[in-house]
Length: 526
Image (cartoon, rainbow, N blue to C red; front, side):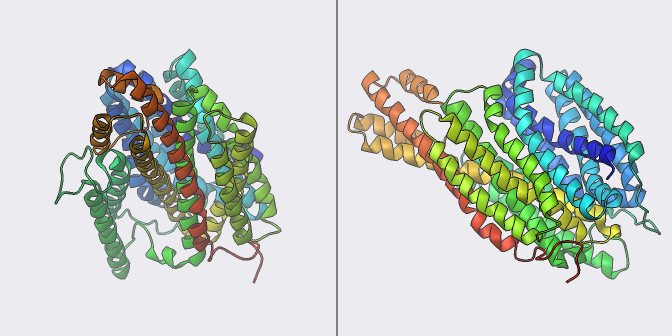
C-alpha cells in the first residue's frame, strides 16, 4: 500500500471538513471583528454549503474531462486561495468571497476527484482500507474542528486556522507527485453547461430552503421574508429546487438519447449497490450531523461549557469513528458490507439511547464519554464500508461521477440532519415550556398569557440565564421568574432527549437503505 499517498488524501479529506466546524464555533468573534450580526455570519456559512452542494457534480465531470489529478491540484490551489483571502478578509463580502465562494468551488473540485483517485491508485483490500481512512478522517475533522477553532479563537485568532490551511494545502499539493493519474476517457467528454446550471441551481435551492427552515419556519411563517397563501417561503424554495432537479434529470435523459455527454449518466441510478450506498450516505450524515447539532447545545447552552471543553468531550466519537473505520476496512475482507453496516446502525441506535440517559442538569462525564465513544464505533463501521461500496459498483470511467454523487448525498444529509433535528428540538422546547408554564400554579394567568403570546411567534434554544434576563426586563415578579426558569430548564432537557430519540429512531428506516448493499465480500464472485 502507498502509505504516503494515503496520508496525502487523508489530509485533504481532513482539510475539507475542518474549517466549517471552525467557523461554527467562531461566529461570536466573527460578529465582533466585522461589526455585523449573527444572521449575516450564519448566511456566509450557509452560502458555503450552497456553493459546494451545487457545484459537486460539475466538479466531478471536470475530473473526467481534464483528468482527476489535474482537477484535484487546481481545486487545491483555488481552495488555498480562498483560505488566504479568508485569513486576510477585511469585510463580510471579502470573507464570503474567500470562504463561501472560493473554498466552496475548491472543495467541489477536490472531493469527487479524491474518491476517484483512491479507486485509481488502490485496489483490493488496500482500497477498502483507504476508503475507511477517508471516512475516519472526515469524522476526525468534524470533531477536532470545534477544539481547534475554540482554542485558536480564544487564545489567538480564527485567522490562524486559515493560514494553517494554506500551508497544509501546499503540503498536499507537493504530495500529489506520489499520485498516479488514472487513464482519461477517449474521446474526452464535454461539459453539459445547461445540465450544470440546472443541477447547481436545483441542489442549491434545496439546500438553501432546508438551511433557512429554522429561521423562516417549515410551513408556519416565523421570520419568513414573504408569506405565500399563509405559508412560509421554505416549502416553495425546496419545491422549486426539486422541480429544477426534475428538469435536470429530463435534460440528462434527452442528452443521452441524442448521443451527447450528460453531466451524470442516469444509468448509474439503476445500479442497486450504488443507489443503496448513496441513500445510506445521506442517512448516515443526517443522523450524525443531527446529533452533532444537538450535543453542543446541551454542553454549551445548558451546561455552559466553552467551545474547547465541548470539543474535548466530543473527542471519543472522533476517536471511535477513526479507529473503527480502520478496523471495519480490515473486516471488509471477511464480512459483507451489508452485515457490517447493519451492525453499525444497531450500535448507533444503542448510542442514541445511552446519550439520552446522560442528558441531565449535571453531566456524568464517564457515562457521557462512553456514549459518545459508542456512537463513534457505530458510525465508524458504517463509513468504513460505504465509500468502497459506491466506487466498487461502477467502472473506471464513472468514478468521478460516483464521487460527485457521494458528496452530494453527504451534503444533503448533513443539511437535512441539522435542519430536521433542529426543527424537532425547537418544537419540542416550545411545546414543553408552554406545558410547564401552564402547569405551574406559582405563575399568574397574565404571565402565562404573555408567555403563550411570545412562544406563538417561535423561538430559539437559548440559555436559562437569557430567559431569566428577558423575564426580569419584562417586569415579571421574582417569585414567578424562578418558576419560569425552572420550567424552561426542564423543557431544555426534554427537547434534547426528544431530538436524540428521533436521531436514534432514524436508524430503523435506514435499514431499508441497506437492502441492496452487497451481501458478499467485495472482490469475491457470487
